[in-house]
Amino acid sequence: MDEAINLEDKLGQFDETWSPRTVTTFNGHDIMVAKFLGEFVWHSHADTDDLFLVLKGAVDIRLRDRTVTLKAGELFVVPKGVEHRPYAKEEAHVLLIEPRGTPNTGDPATAAGRKVI
Image (tube, rainbow, N blue to C red; front, top):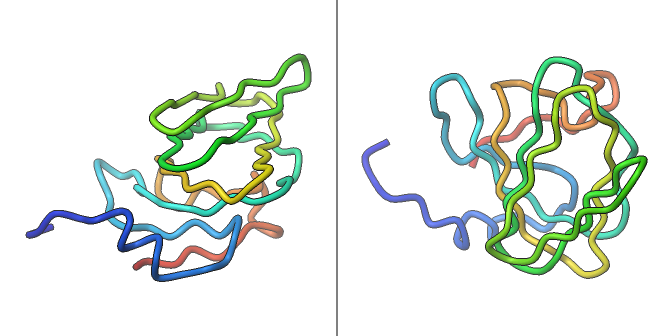
């Protein structure tokens, strides 16, 4: 990486929701941006934690026993193996950090394809 990455510019390059875009990598991890709107599927990641950093809007991270509400500038880490379901009432922009290739649904068969922008 030779230049700064403008996350707002990257988010302006696509409209799809729940389809993360990799903007760079860091120590074997994908640094991604995504747009959230509505409900995502219940899922978990058996081998990795799941980090959500809200850049714009608000996101509920629904867990089986509670809901964690995040506003812009806030982050939450879902521990590995914990079922969760992100939800955004209005479009939200989120930064995600995951080990390279982690399926966003926890299952490669149903995950969104990885795209690099």
